Image 1 (cartoon, rainbow, N blue to C red):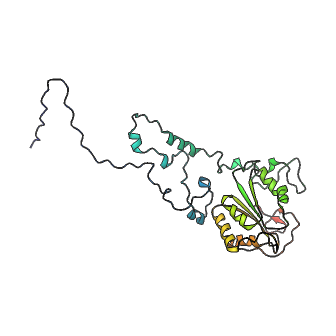
Image 2: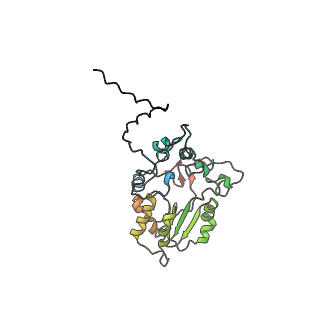
Image 3: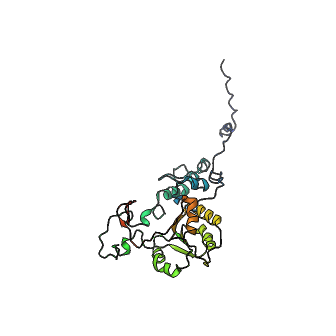
Length: 293
């Protein structure tokens, strides 16, 4: 059977054509938009303070803290890609990229100046054990001049170091003339503390923590307990913080062992006099150290 022919509309007095029949409506599927919650928005874990610049790979740190998804070079992130609804509403059909997608692509290919750009921080001598031919050297045969240092002058202004000095004889003036002065010339921000309470209070804003362990009676450092100190330092380390720990000799091991126990499962003990400078050689020979880079 042939389908019935459609009857044409009757002609009108004017020449205006009859309106075309309205297209059949189809259900409109929802279009994903940038406002839809992502997995990062619903992540209940606290964010890592270093964000995209975090270098930690240990499972405990990654499990405990959330991290933004890293964008591959030349690829725009999913959150910045224009949705189909916004592109369809545009009156122009030219493939002009939106400002959000272009800025995302630009930021993903630019790493200069970020913490991941190591050449911003370290000189050409970093990572080398070979002796440097310098015009002048000190009494220990170290090249003299900041151009021979591992780090550039003033390059570490983004980093904060909290120093916990728990020894009675070591004073801030001594620190400033030695290690403190050298660190500040590289740009580090130094926070000096002399009791455990102040030290733990400043851990939350620090990138590196120095623990100069002590146990002299009468020094105003006994303001916390082993459990509180150990758990706070361990949490700082898991978060990605760096640690420098000194334990001079017995009995100056208290804070050092409080920190080392939960992290490495080791403890310092004994009295081993030094009085010498280590030389590059074999890691198994007395007075020498082996190559480690």
